[in-house]
Amino acid sequence: MSEGSGNLIPVSIRLLYDGMTVQDNVYDADGDRLLITAGNTLNADQIERIHRINSGRDTIFVTGRTHKTMVSKRPNIDIDSRAEVEENTGYTEFKDSTSDMLGEIAGKKKVSQESLNEVADALSDRIISTPPDVVMSLINSMAPVDEYLQRHSVNVGMLSGLIGQWFSLGKEHIDKLALIGLLHDCGNTFMPPHVLTAERKLTVVEYEVIKTHPVHTHELLAEFPEDVRLAASSHHERLDGSGYPKGLKGDAIPLEARIAAVADIYDAMTSKRPYRAPNSPFKVLAQLESLCSDKLDSNVVGVFKQNMPKELIDKPVTMSDGTIGIVREIDPDDIEFPKVEISKRVVKTSTALHCVSMFSDD
Ligand SMILES: [Fe+2]
Image (tube, rainbow, N blue to C red):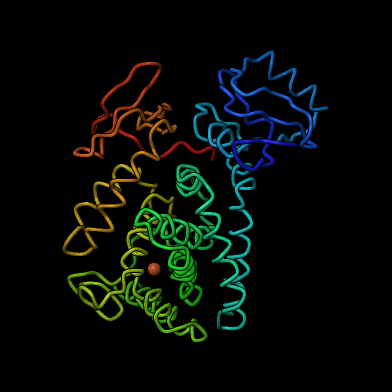
């Protein structure tokens, strides 16, 4: 098997679609027989023939570039494609490792540095080798509510690492950002589950209890260097001193915590929670901007706002009237209301017809 455009990866044959142009050669389930030649645009008959040639097996081998097209440009997504994409990109493995880590914390009341460093290094490697829009499609997919903490931990790790990449930070620093993101909310394992999953606004007392979770994060990370402990436990601190648990101000908040804060807000607000529906990435980007300077680091929000919109272009989105559109244009001065293609017509969205969330198969 030889391929000039990068390593071949196994993916599901069901992600091929009518009208897809294949950038690089595609190989069969054994990885050695050429199924589709680079440059071919597929139609339904060809796809059926390829299924037959592949002897009914689900796996084919494609380059990362072709995989990116398969998962990101496809307007109609199979019911199980989110699970497939998560499996094929290694997200499921990270989610399971993080779930084990959180279970271990609940049992032993501490986090083992050795096992976590391994997961963070692997996550960081994955962030660097995966196209940013695929990372974003994983983060933007609608997570089941009962998997929130492990997914949120992986997502904030991925997103923090991605922001580090956008800042052109070195691999070691990206490893550290991935680690801090993975660990930032581990103190939540100490929070009463009925408060974490409450389908209503929290009472003042409950909110005060929840505000102690970063203190638990700091305590749980006793085996880690103090800079990691401080950054992980400072993700709710705000530049103007209005955050918690310490009310740190300005530069007293480590850069990694300022990055994790933006990643945390983005993922939390775009996620489905028991007490509210998800917010669209466009609405969250607009809100992040309004929190700039006073509360969030404007450099971090700036790099986020500069890079994130291009990862959302050409992606399917659920509209407020229930239709599915494809994001076609995002005006940097009006991020909240992008232009969306609906039934072959490009429309400017507005409060009357707006994007509710990125389209998900749940
Ligand atoms: Fe938190």
